[in-house]
Length: 424
Image 1 (cartoon, rainbow, N blue to C red):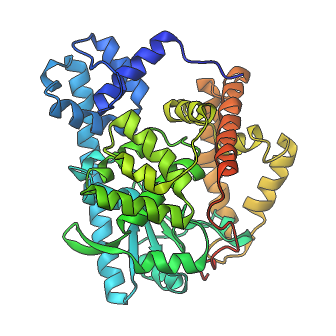
Image 2: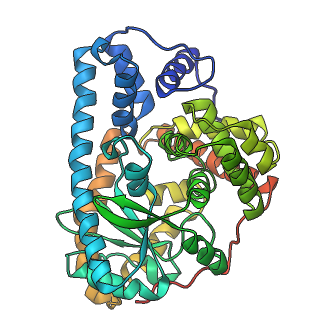
C-alpha cells in the first residue's frame, strides 16, 4: 500500500519547488546547513543538479551555499559541460555524414532542447541522442554511421522479433547511445500523422550546423506524451523543466490559444493539458489559462494527480528491466521470465541480421561483464530485498494505474498499425 509522504518530506519538496520557480505558495528557503542542502539535492535528483546551479545563480543564492554544496553543484556543471562537448562533436559528425549522403533527419528531445530552449546546453543532462529518420533511409543511415564507428550491438535481438521504437547504436569512445527512430516517438504510429509532423518541422542552428527540429506544436505534444503517456511521469521533474523552458519561448496569448486548439484537434489535449498544468504549478512554466480553455480537456481527478506527483518525486534507483517486468506482472514468474530471456536474447537473430550462434559471443560477454555484475551490485546494495521490491512493485502498479486512468478519460493516438520497421 502506498503511504503519503511525511511532513518533513513535504516541506523539503516545497523548498525544492520554490528553488525551481514554482508559482504556488512555496517558501523560498533561506540559509541552511550542509545536511539540509544535501537532502534537497537528493530530493531533486542528480539529472537536475546543473539546472539547480543555474537557478541558484539567478536567485543570487549561489554565494550563500555551504562550501560542500557549492562544490558539488559546480562538479555537476563541469561534468555536464564535458559530456555536452562530446555530444556536440558526435552531432557534427552525424550532420556532415548525413549531409554528404543526402539523408534528412530530425533531431529530437534532449539534444534539440538543450540548444534551442535552455539558457545553456550543459544545463540539460541526457544519456543519448535521439534522431528521427524516414524508414526507407534507415539502412543507409546505419551504414553511414558505421563508418564513424557506430554499431548496433549484436546482443540486441528486440528489433527482429517485433517492430521497435528505435535502433540503438553504440560507439566504444562515446558515453552515450544513439537512438535512431523510424517514427516520432510518443506521437503515435500513424504514418499519415508522421508525414504531417515531418512536414511541419523547423530548422535550428545547433553546434554551428543547420538541423531540422520539431515544430513548437509537435515539440510540446511530444514532451507531454513522453512524460505522461509513455512513462507515467516516472522520468521525474526534468520533463517538467523541459516544458517550462519551451513555454518561455512561446511568445503570446494568441499562439497559446492556437496551440490549445491544435492539440485538441490532434486528440492529445488531455495529455498536454495535464503535463503543462503540472509544469505550471510545480516549476513555474508560464502557461496561460487561454491554452487550457482552447484545449478543452476534461479535468483530471485528484487521485491521478497524486499518483503522478509520487512518480515525479521517485528517485529510488530503478530495478533492472527484467525485475520490473516481473513486478509488473508482464513476464510471469521467474522461471517463465528466464525461459523468455533465453529465447529472446540468446536464440534470436541479432538486429544486424547475424545468426544467433554468431551473436552468441557478444551476448555472453555482455551478460558476464555488464548484466550479471549489475545484478550483483543491486543485491549488495539491498535493491533486491523483499521490502525494496515491494516498494518498487507499488510504484510500478501506480504508474500503470496512472496511465490507464488518463487513457480512460479521453481517447488519443493510434495504437496501430505500427509504422514500418527499419530495413535491416
